[in-house]
Length: 462
Image (cartoon, rainbow, N blue to C red):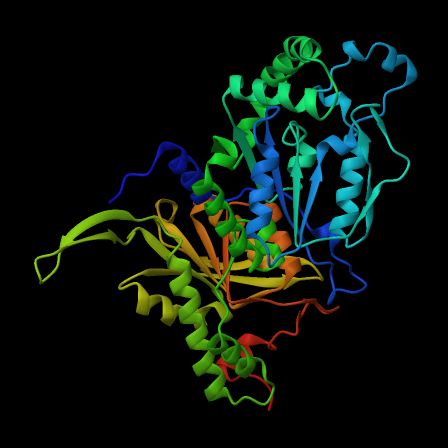
């Protein structure tokens, strides 16, 4: 196997670790029009020292996303305009300090864009150090790139991002680039540039910018010269853009890739006219696919084996310390698929009763005695409000199961349930085959497929 260069390995490893984002979509989902919530953009933050190549990296990403709408917002547009008094002592002003930026205005613009509204981005003149009266009007886009030296410094701005990038370049090269840029583009002399660098730029980099590197998901050494790292980033963006909005927000939510086969099976199990025999048959097929996908999120160990041809095959060994837990009674429909995939697997049971409009009461539980040392596949075909799932997960946690060891498997999920579970238990993985539109006033999933247990076990009314 070809050995990867260190800088490429950094980008690859960080991509594999996943994109962490703690943004809650609840404030953006319209309750009055749940079927048409605003499409959520994929937000990328690109930070790094002055003249590190941030803009080059952004332009390379944009050039490879030709089939997507991309909006580039530069943090420099949000500099505070200097007063006449400040202009008189402009040499004493630190443009690399967090206080130099109008972060509140940046947050306001991003909030409007995420809610599907047009915004006006200020135009900042670096020669006069003031924002012009007429700004640039921009519309929401599929991808929004926030670029700037301190774009990863403020936690409120970081929470907006689905991907955080830090561009790392040698300090001498950055200084040389800054001298060229400021003298040619901004009409300054070399001595002023060097004085500003020594007094403000370098200290601010060490105090504010460099520490923000730890928040990055991806670090790009050599900036725009690292084409391999940028290609990996673009591939990952394409993957994320093809996912449901909630998968962009919650990295612990996984929807199996849709195909015409999957769509066709959903059509059949959702159809009110489908017979019990066909409902069970196609539900079982979908359940098997969800279970297989869920097993793919378990840890594994590498192992080389010899094939009958005498060849060496670099394979992996399945993780064996796992068990299933079904939520009675709908969850029991998923047990056969789990047993078919995992020979001799232990399966526990939980019975939870609805209590009032939003409460749940634990009625019965029978779990493996050593469940705390196992990874747990929690089985329930429908995730609606999330109340039942939260009750089941809290029980597993009380038994000593680590939150990160729980994988919740279901066929369909409502956004409200995903919000509820992910906000309370962000380390629990949710694997589903489709995310539906919303819940109705009776907490039924819409469009949904009716009462799953009754249709599967044949106890629904004719």
